[in-house]
Image (cartoon, rainbow, N blue to C red; front, side, top):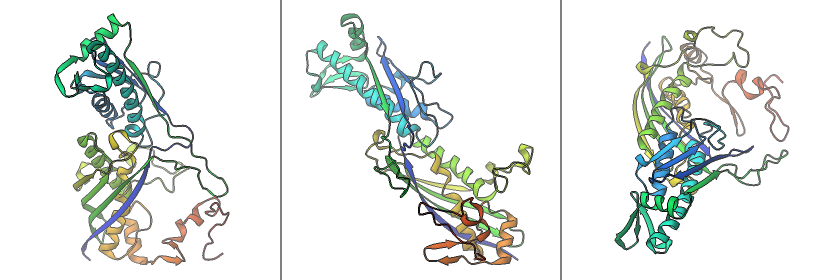
Amino acid sequence: MAKHRGRGIATIEYPTGMNQNGDPSQAWIKVKPDGRIDVFAGTVDIGQGSKTVHTQIVADTIGVPYEWVTMDVSNTDSSPICTGSFASRGTFIGGNAVRFAAERVRERILEIASKEMEIDAADLEIEDGEVVAKGAPDRKLGLADVAAAATWTHGDLLTGTGAALKPYSTVDDDTGEVDSEPHSAISYAACVAEVEVDDETGEVRVERLVQVYDVGRAINPTLVEGQIEGGALMGLGLGLLESSYPYYPSVEHRGEQFGAYLAPTLEDLPDLDNVILEYPSADGPFGAKAIGEMANNAQPPAIMSAIHDALGVWVTEAPATPEKVLNAIQKRKEPQRDGKRVVYDEEISIAAVSGNRGKGADGEGFLLPDE
């Protein structure tokens, strides 16, 4: 009996900016007479940092300091529509909505500044809260002066609206084919897990995770890394502790108290080595893609692969509890291959647990060995 060390790897891809039943985000922005910016949007910050990121997007798009922008996401009465803070859409869909609105505001600012400075709007730009003539930096006008002129000289309101909605992708019910891509960009990630496994107790301890994420453009690198590290802890739980099967969809035999549900704590967190790659998307704000949901997808399969590397056996169902590890050691089952199909465990295969025998678009299902 001994402890064994192993290393495993998993890679994933994740769609960004999808729309299968209408998935809009909207925003509107106004410039106050003192040049400060008010943004009204419906994307609620539940801890993922969307309020910060949207503020950065607006400030950079218009050309003003971050501190000049106030985000109002306080209630649905005063804010435009947002489908919700889910589906890895906050930065991509919600961020595009505020970006489009900010672009309209920038155009309006330059229109008024053009009248005040008697310079064509195409020859003006906004830098750090000042409208500056291209090639003549001494000719400039503060945004507060432009906003004041719009209000009291021209009787105008500097405002702009934006809406982000991926065109609907029609699905052929017979073939499963679509008439256009249902997503706007694909994010990619990889995770390498290093584990120590006790072959007597079945206990698995993850000692290190190396995580690599392509996020398109890290608008706020600190928030991106926070998402990655939070996802690592969630992935650790999915891989080793947290389980809803066989209780789902019935809760009759589930623990009645929160303490009966095992989840990892900071004491369980392994050493983390995070790498952020930036391969910009064509449609995301400043090239950004998604990071939210995919942050906990790669760790469980990487952990399972590491267990196999350590012991030479496959744990075929997450989480890899000590009981499942010891059972795998005892049975030492090898996967069954049938053409392109590989089944690691028949009793939890699609054919065994699905209501339609795992039938696909062709109407064909899978047979169990005794059928």
